[in-house]
Amino acid sequence: MFVPLYDHNPLEHIPRPYVNWTIILLTSLIWLVFQSDFVVPAYNASILGLGLSPVYLFDGLPPPPDMSLVPEWATLVTYALVHGDLWHLLGNMIFLWVFGDNVEDALGHVRYAAFYALTAAAGGLAHAWMLADSDMPLVGASGAVAGVIGAYLILHPRTKLWILVLGRIPLRLTARWPLLAWVAIQFGSILLQEEGETAWWAHVGGLAAGIILVFVMRRPGVALFDRDLPVGG
Image (cartoon, rainbow, N blue to C red):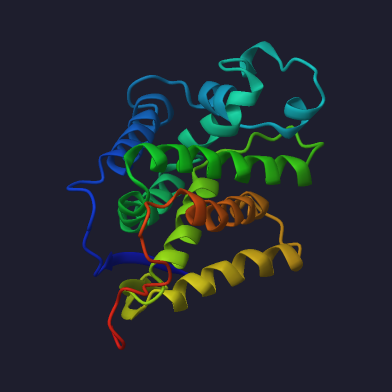
């Protein structure tokens, strides 16, 4: 697997990606205040109250009192604001930092905020549909981040990207290669029925939503597939 470090992709339509920064800051603050045990010892309460539990989303039964911070439908978005641990948070926020600004640039501030919520919900729905009997809360921004990755792949497949492979090898590649490898890993993990803590269906649901939504939500005139780059760019 790889960690994105930097893309050579300046903004064209907005001065700053304020919404992307706000999402990163808000998500990080929620972890620091409610999940780190440094400020408020509310880790379990935040996971249970804001995480998405498929069995309660679909069966119509009320969840236990300690899982009722927000309505069940709202957990389709709030699950993306809480994380299992610091590394879970950092992994998602690094991807969002590198790729989210250019997606916001292509969509605009308001539409990017809606895009992020919709891809989170799509990831949550895919996870809940495929694991409908699970009472294990789904947490993490991975579904929405997968949507951002999908949109970036449609918008900027030819952009040069610095990545860190296996935690130690820096490489500069065209963005489509590591991102397509990431996509392949998600589908491959589902086909191989890999088990563990990773919510593969949430990734695939968010990814599919991001690819579809970028076509209809981008600004008029925004090119797809880096068509505005010169040949060899």
